[in-house]
Image 1 (cartoon, rainbow, N blue to C red):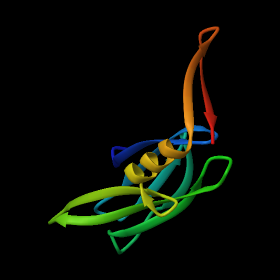
Image 2 (image 1 turned 180 degrees about the vertical axis):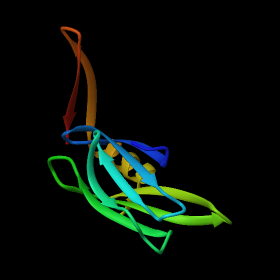
Image 3 (image 1 turned 30 degrees about the vertical axis):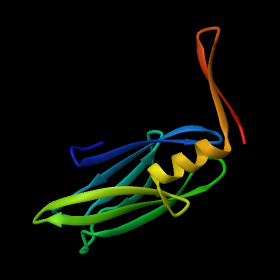
Image 4 (image 1 turned 135 degrees about the vertical axis):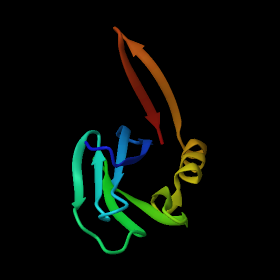
Length: 115
């Protein structure tokens, strides 16, 4: 990964926690998305520096969207949506409908989720 890494999110889904990393080249418009260290989208040259990238996460193919917005000048804001909701809202709703326990079994961290 290059020095263009601008955002990292940890997303808890029914199949576990996924790490989403986003690279944004603000001079070339390059966009690269990694899920759990694996590159899933690469766009090396984009004229439009703002916009969105939509992709699927996890074994359940949960829909995720990264929104790229200009804040001022050459500053950008990156937000992640899961199933059309902001990540914070998604996690709040998920905690209302699921029960999650973190267990350590023989030195291995395990997550049990009941939905």
